[in-house]
Image (cartoon, rainbow, N blue to C red; front, side):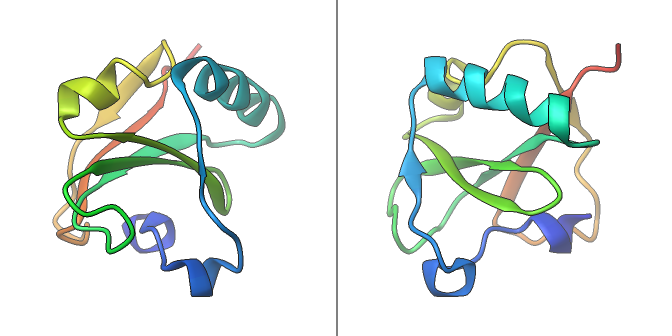
Length: 106
């Protein structure tokens, strides 16, 4: 799964990032879980477009343009939608992936 969710440069995505806030993240995430079997937020570091920031990107069956930005993990946690659970890091995860959060099972 890690290779499929690792954020890609803007050129590869063919779209610009849309930086959103916590309220928008909650709304977009709620829509995503209704229409996709999996919706996750992948937290990454060392992104060229956001030096010094951590980035949380919404991922469904494809990458989305929706990102949250913060300079600390605590700052990102405060913006992530409620009801998420953290997945354990896998050995195959690229080094830039810090954490992955998914909706809790119902």
